[in-house]
Length: 286
Image (cartoon, rainbow, N blue to C red; front, side):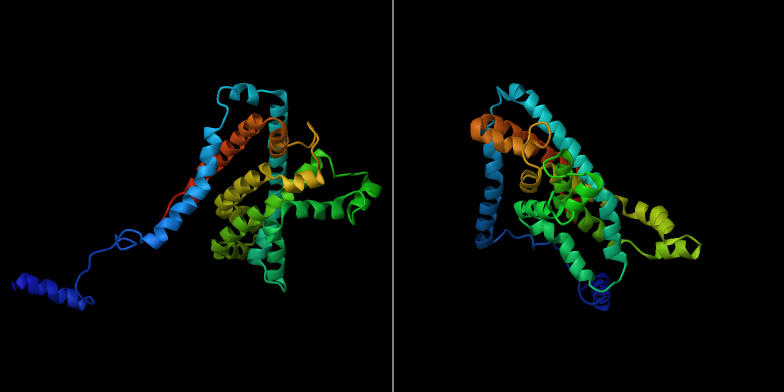
């Protein structure tokens, strides 16, 4: 062994052992067959229905299908209501996320569970819950009707309420996670310089968590745009007033399947655009 080799060996020993080549995750080996087969089946299960939608799409009549007055009416209403529902979620959801992330109080775990409950609650059940609470004879709705003359069910405002109910948890979860990852010492430093807690939140915390808020808002908007069960239960299906794109797809499927496929492709395109907008968060690894 040459002196140089001995020197390298001694250096490696002092560092804890001989040098080892850096190995990529997975060891550079192929996937074992018992895992590869169900993985490919799962991929096909998720991808084949989308491919079938593209294959069966009436491409020749697509311009005619998508330029009808009913489609544009439903699309316009969907965009307006989804945007309004996202705005409502931002106004009340961001403070709720801050409360869950920054304030210690008894029962915080229960509150977090209640906030995330609409994620797992069947949308139709959510619509029934909204009817029993905000309906004309609901525990809150009857007071809204008698005191202010406000009736939410089967109105455009009812669509916004139903969509916000199912979409806001996505925003709250995203913002709460971002708040927990943000360093609270910046807020504490602002407080020591004389800023009130609200000023520190507005001038320091909000700029720090802006990417999380943006991601949560996009998720909430996409969820609101695709909402069906709570909307049809609480707001009904009235063209021009409460008929959103998912409801139009359901109605068209009963009489004109090609129109239903064309409308579905519009929502699919919107979903792909949402994923593309969030590619830095979900579509990159490491």
